[in-house]
Length: 316
Ligand code: IYT
Ligand code: CU
Ligand code: CU
Image (cartoon, rainbow, N blue to C red; front, side, top):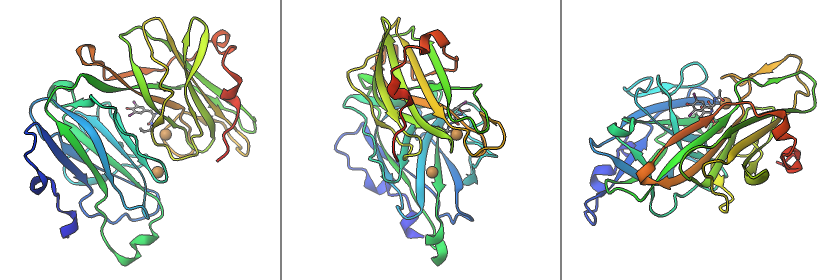
């Protein structure tokens, strides 16, 4: 159908020969049930390095619950779309998240002079777009969906690169009936300075609040705090906080086991849980490190000093 045709080629305005746009859209799909996750891979359209400097969502508000954009080397499939619910994932290798759009949440903008670096040398040859179709009653008319994103890109090197620091728990167990379970994650930061500008939280049903902090000289400073039951977009971070060598990054997810009759573990299905705090940062290009993560359980002694707000639920 004509409305699925990519506008990318027609759209080029040769104002600046370094700049171009890429449309990533579903190829006219009809999800077969509510809560379907569909993915599609797109090769990064250049042999040289390129930078994503802006994201423009093209999502049908009545059917798309959320969209995520990943970069990786080996997507699960390279021809057309696939079902990427809990069974099949996005990539064979590690996927790096670059963008999240969620219904009813304001989209994040990259700061000026900041871009996500993509292309062969950065280990990212493919984009993978994941779309979660929520309520599919709007498909009763059998129309096809072409939701997706436009990426504004440039081949001009950017002064700062964007990156993601992911704090995640790998070993939390939530006991049935237990009112509060804290999942604590913390790591020493031993690299060049990063400047957080957005954060995203992710848990499944049992998460109440997720908070992320920088600890410097024993003092805890909030980077961001959100209910994972609100749209899981990237929200603006506390801009005052920069992170440098010698700091500690820490996150706490608060869960409840109320109403459960069995233990809940970390895992991929909706009956499992996850505890994720993503920090989107920028960093000077000359020592660019685009992805970092922390999976260490924080020490009890350290978390004795976490601000009490980390355990205050956020009303949704
Ligand atoms: C076990 C777990 O917590 N998985 C998370 C975090 C994660 C994200 C990425 C782990 C790896 C990744 O490559 I990207 I290894 C998780 O799956 N989070 C989901 C999405 O997959 C991104 C989320 O919505 O945050
Ligand atoms: Cu969703
Ligand atoms: Cu999850």
